[in-house]
Image (cartoon, rainbow, N blue to C red):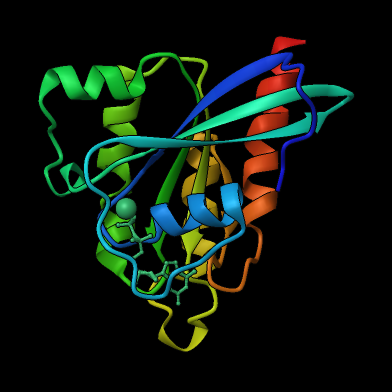
Length: 181
Ligand code: GDP
Ligand code: MG
């Protein structure tokens, strides 16, 4: 799934950040392997998965980094934080549309990101679990407004139903690609 060709023209590192349990690992697993686990275990350590795709006739290997537990502590150990953000050209800032607190923490995540990552990093705000519309606690408009103010891309996704996951990654990867070309 996803491996487009042997020859790689670009490798783009993209980091996933946001509170625990918002669905970061399931978004990654949906994108990298087209899999979803309803009762997923918390990630251990920092890990990444890759998927190679074609953008404008070039093969782009997306190397997506996912975190693990440390997300409970907003201030990581310095060494871990800088290794995580080092070389990242894209970031996906994830909250859960059914948990207001995870959206309220987004400014802090953004601050950390802007403090550690390259200033030209492409950022998308993602409201995950859009399949749980009946439990929605964050209006789409609030997130849209915030994203506009902070100049972020924005999409609501469902890793469960596979809604907009592909689009979210493509938005970030295509923008990075365009900046480089
Ligand atoms: P992480 O801590 O941010 O990596 O979150 P996980 O990916 O481990 O997901 C936390 C929980 O939310 C798990 O029970 C997932 O099955 C569930 N989950 C993740 N994405 C979705 C989604 O799009 N819809 C629903 N309904 N549940 C999801
Ligand atoms: Mg995880």
